[in-house]
Image (cartoon, rainbow over all chains, first blue to last red; front, side, top):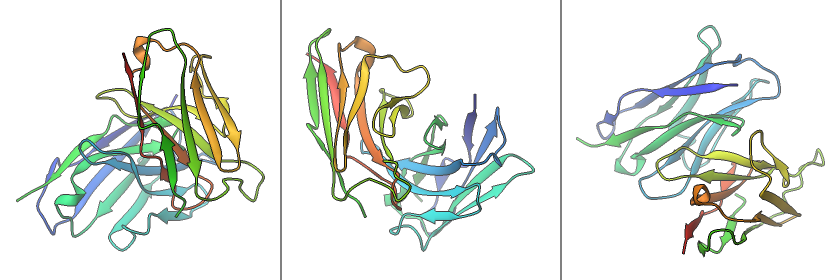
Length: 114
Length: 112
């Protein structure tokens, strides 16, 4: 069974870059027909899909964040990462990584504040 | 973007009684490959989301059979046949037929 774990700073200053990593265990990130993605949840609110990449190599982002976000993969470390630049307080949320939405990390709270 | 609309937004239920949540999409969720990528997720308080149902009606591994999904096209339903205390939480429908993937607003299930 896949296990995912997010890691990264819990506090980011406005206008800086949020960087998170998702470490995958129990299976290869290169497995076929899987997608790996990020979802966020502002405090007290619902879920928002950020973006995903597929084993085929394609990556998709939600339009509202597309200009600021990059999802990348490091197959040698079995990890994938999220970078969101020019953050504001509106980017404060719990960030989850997910595999196919079948498996989820526990989430990590990122607060944007000076 | 496909808009997912859930009703009700809150559902107080008596233990042992059934519960039902509806989800409608602004466009058909039938993919060009013939599948319908509509899923249901449960989020218990303080926990990450958990996949319950995928492709309308398929229960994910380990999901109790009191959870069932149905529907087609743009209208879908999640049913809990007999609500248990551990079912308290927020339930989300989600479509993965078209990018961007989108979630419903969530339905809070609580015990009366």
